[in-house]
Image (cartoon, rainbow, N blue to C red):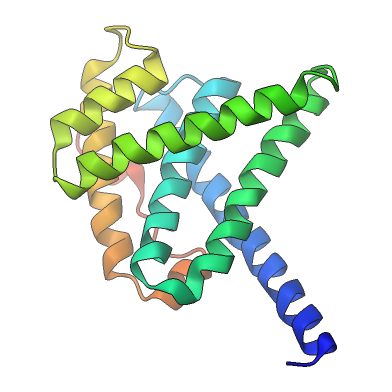
Length: 182
């Protein structure tokens, strides 16, 4: 591949990652999550929903094979760039932002391990417990909502698995969270 071909391919990946990350954020900001599922409409609640949706997209890309590793990496970088940008925008000091982004990255990987194990085992109760821990910091509030969110995550996983990988890359394959009964 020529140098210009490499640059063009890289620019295409960046563009595709930006579009896919935008679709992830749009899905994570669906009002139903905050209104009907009791996810707090706070920076932390929004982060948790972005992580949940992004995790599922990255899992689908991973399952589709190594051809999508680079796109996965660039989309994940988009998350951490977004976290960094948002922290700076709300006025967190420049010296503490890198530490907080590092903590957000560690939190992302902690959630990946927990969610992956629960989804792989089709363990809705474990998934709900993890969501309770991460979203509500273990508080008893909203446990029924977390069970519903776990059902949503299981249904979303099935929907993404049934969606052609090209459509997933284009940001399609998300289900309406309002379809999951309370």
